[in-house]
Length: 258
Image 1 (cartoon, rainbow, N blue to C red):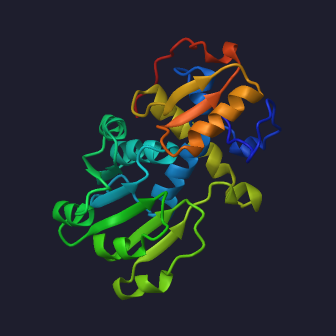
Image 2: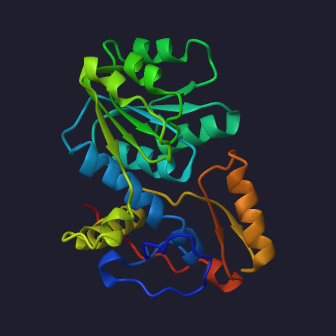
């Protein structure tokens, strides 16, 4: 299981071994391919940026819960911490998806009283927010977060009023999983360690792949279709384009329980 090169549709990649991990034994190649980028992003967001631990409690709000990163992040938060997860969704399928992944509460972000519903679930405000969609959300973050709360964001949004966060002393984190490899960080091996941990969690049945659609064969037509679905903004989980022989299930191997 590798951390993929950015913005590439190539079949073969030359990858630094420090950002490579073993494929989970219980997944075929297509199902495993859905995980590296999103699992690294989710893991770094939770444990490197928000500094959650196995003993962490409190409340985490997940905006973008049905996307690739949000789908892994919900699972990691529920499996590796004691936080209560509030997921934001809007459609019936995305709501059920978040429930199936383990979210404690799923709220419709189109509801006029969405923020009030969050505060009702977390009096005083949530402790942390994961955001895949931050445009225009600063007033919302201020309303739903407790003082000294944290936000970790993964989207590309340059026009944000960070100064407005000061009165509540809120902390803003950017998560970008390519930063370690782009700048040859001295702890680059950590991404190998994270991928190995994810593979273990998958093989022990604690985390599942977020693959929802495998397109075949690996050609320009299917690549265009994959981009079309992703750009629609309504995709659940991850879409993979793969050669047919890579979607056959590999033989399951019992995993070691932690």
